[in-house]
Amino acid sequence: MSDDDDKQLSRLLQRNLAPPARDPMFRIRVLERREREQFVRRVTLLVGTGIAAAGVYAVAATLGETDRTVRGVGLCLALALGAAMYVPALFQAMRGMGGK
Amino acid sequence: MTSDAEDVALLEAVRGGSERAFNLLIDRHQQAIRMFLRGVTTPADAEDAAQETFLAVWTQAKNFKGMSSVRSWLLSIAWRKAKGMQRWFFRSRKRETAYYDEAAITGMTAESGDPAERLALNQALAQLTTDQRAAVMLCLGCELSHGEAAEVLEMPLGTVKSHVSRGRARLREFLGDSYE
Image 1 (tube, each protein chain N blue to C red):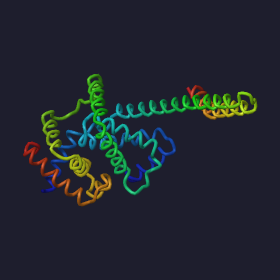
Image 2: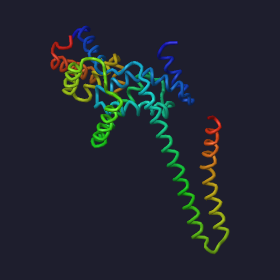
Image 3: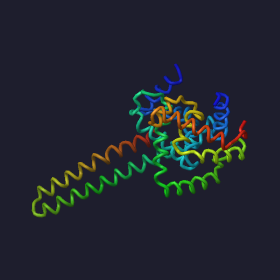
Image 4: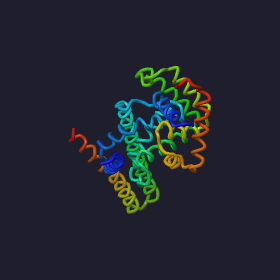
């Protein structure tokens, strides 16, 4: 098989399968998808943390039905968990609003 | 700066969270990645895998070790994505429907060139095994060396050479002299 054959085949493949060299729509689709995936990830994390914090408090409240200290520790843990997730998200949202 | 060095610099910047570098990297490589994927899989899967390839670049830029060119690294991600998609037939059908629905609205599939020639080429490519198509697309379509293609496909060099040789022969046999 000669180099000319390969060149012809290369040209045929490129002519029929290559998209335009510049395709801003493709870039926009990638960026849009990235934003969507980041949003879903953030929401999942926030909802998951909320559920975990509620779970921690529920367990502590059940175990410490008569013991206020255990319940207090549970509440603190739940608040700490919530704060660790929500406060950075809140700052990020505020920064986002400030930037616009 | 050479093209390769520029790519590495862009990837470094992407690692640091640069949007501009990410956009440039997409612009520089989308054509090769999408052409390769169009040759190895369906149009819908190709589009999806190409997008996923660049999303992986955004999240995994730190995984680039510099052992190959950035383009080879991107093609190897694209190849893994394409192979992964073929395992999920039903999702692939769903993507196909969504792709043609969107294409009908945006005219996404409108390509230049001769439709008859494209049809003949697609039929010819369908005669090859997936590995043969991938090897042919890399070596002839993307003009990589056999060694680079072997790295991308994670196959021995001899296997790639054999895939290219057989693939080329079958394409030629199927297409005849129609493409000259």
